[in-house]
Length: 168
Image (cartoon, rainbow, N blue to C red; front, side):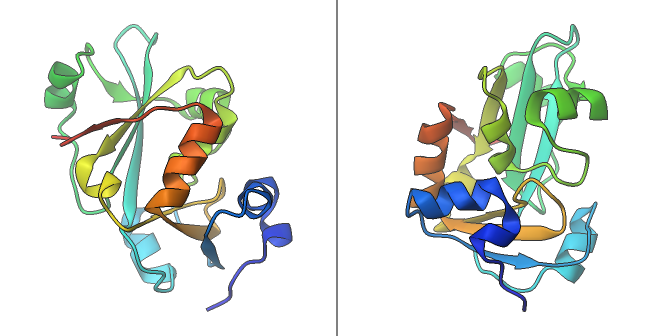
């Protein structure tokens, strides 16, 4: 398992180090799906996540939904609970514009690029209650694992307040 140093991973991990937030990260082959990540990512501990970037039917709301890696998201029911009309996957262009990442690199850590707080953040309660959470550090060739306290500090730093719920 090849561990990453902050200076190797760029500004996101440099921020984590400067803030003295606990984290660990590993390099791996590029992954684009959950199955690829399960095969390629060495054991880090913590909940593995699925990250779904959606938009409403009018394209006015953008929502990053974080769930355990093995959970399917019922978009229609999620839309009813939020409420939001006609949720669907956002395009790669919207993903780049709002979160500054490409498909395969989406994670909770991408909200650092949402300077205007235009993206709503929905986190499944199982992820929120986990002792440690995994996600990509803005690229799909590494995985970052952080304890809950670090996740809370990071979100406070970015100004994002998550809506914690049982995601359908």
